[in-house]
Image (cartoon, rainbow, N blue to C red; front, side, top):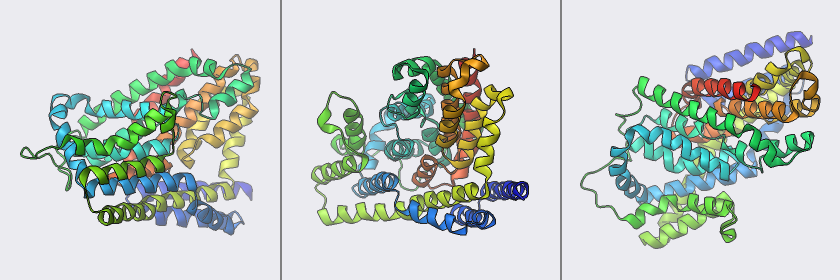
Length: 420
């Protein structure tokens, strides 16, 4: 009976992937499949409970809605046009480095802001429109930002780093000191790959966005042009201990940015307020809506037993433990949109016994962490992917299509360095 349920679950997952690739509505597909799997698993309410729980995911809702509110306020005041036109001359000189630059800058932002979703929202609101205005296709622009959302591995505050450090009995910086070379090498490979993909697909130039276009006769107000980057500057400065007064959450930074934009542009307060809240509403409907749907899908996977089977299969095969450490968390991160479950399970159950397999605990723990992180970075249902897709106005699956090769190459290079 259990085997039959797993087979049915696998068939449903394949059907979901096929439907998403074919461009089916992500919300309907994910919710429908999640409810179906939960019903087959004998706990139909699990999917509906997940729906209700995801509706009030405070961290994501606060970040996403406030960022999109600020983005619409910036668009209303046309500060985004001033930024794009101010950057036009620079872009024309360094076009070849534009996509790599966005990947690396997003990665650096994610080191300071260890939340992938928060980074996607804050950095994506600036970098995606900037790339699109420079002629980069929307899906590629979103993929470039998403490609850089695993810099959090170099942040001591990422939960997996202190977890591995505790298992190994070392300092958290010793863990980061061990895996940072593999992490940076994987970033370099991913950056090169996505740049090549952009060129091969001819998506690195030629796109003409409806709203953001460079106008040779546009008179740039450089104070206006600074407004879109104010929140991210605040967040980055606040993440350091140099300016402790600026340490705050994403929503607070977005509100401050909106208030400064109001003062600088002298826009009518009611008009800017309407634009801000309109953006928040659109964010909930288009972005949070898909995140809620993804939560239902994951609940279905759990209910039918696929997640437990995958983790058990990974933990109960010590003969292939090195492969499991690398690819197990990666595959589960890809499937569920979060590498945390598999990574924590693997590190808790297997990593303490790493010396029995000829590896150090830090080495094995780092492999599992990098694998889960890269799997999540490639996943079409990860919160950060959905946020980037919402900003660019594309299907999340289009981002995964473009990030697949970069993430697989990054995984291969990173694991080879960690192993040898």
